[in-house]
Image (cartoon, rainbow, N blue to C red; front, side):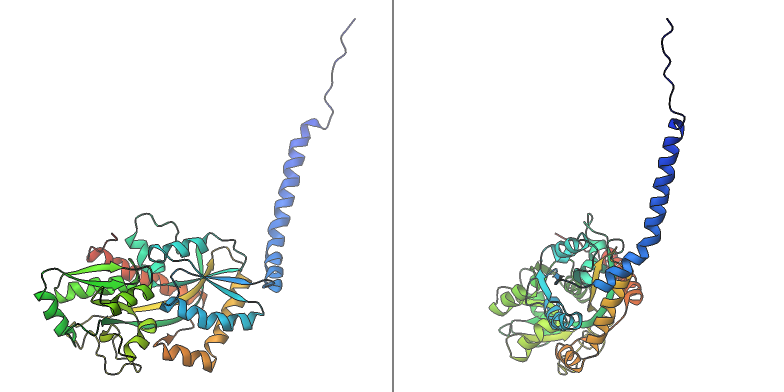
Length: 342
């Protein structure tokens, strides 16, 4: 008896090709629908509260600005904007956290010069890429920095401070809101241009550094103007110089570094809003539009003026170009001055 022969179905050989064809059609359909899905997501956004990550502790300039703008942003969008402070590593910790959140428009991060433009040159193993992992939305404002000292210190000018520092048996310490911040570089550049030895004393934000400077635990500090301004006006700290090219209307009696003998010295901080890189463009556009409207409000402009800030309003593309130019500028300074993070 002849064993029965098994015959494969006539369609078996074509099944893989049909599956590939179906998969290709599905992928094409998804690609076609993706822009419409993004538009739909933007239309529905926001439908729940938004988190705004501030990578520094409460009380500093970054936090103060986020709270001023965040309240108004919630009113513009019709959903609460909740400030979350995630401090550490010179702003890297909170910035990295925000960069790794879902790109759905419900996580913002307050970026500044440190995590976005300075830290990529300072830290060998930065856990995020400011260009690849984050999308700029709106640059909010720029601010000058102040060199402040404890009022008990027997100095009333930069010249006095340098003379005092050179008489001390050990280098004076200067406080900053953290390693890698623009204030860190401000101090290092000051020491380099003035030819004086100083020791960097990094804190986890402005508030603890200012508190220790007022208490006399550290003699001097470089800080953003918004967080130090009221302490200077009330006499709790003495401002010796401002780091901008011109004097500030808020402190017209305080000379610039250039006027104090450090010709060519100029450093300013800046702040802006970013989101995870894959956030749909329609959501980025809506967010930018809301922030632009907020920056035009007289009440907000008054508050930012009182903080010593200069309103920017640069949109996504312009803000991205600015971050790139600042990264190149500060990278060159970090390398030429051999600045490192302890």
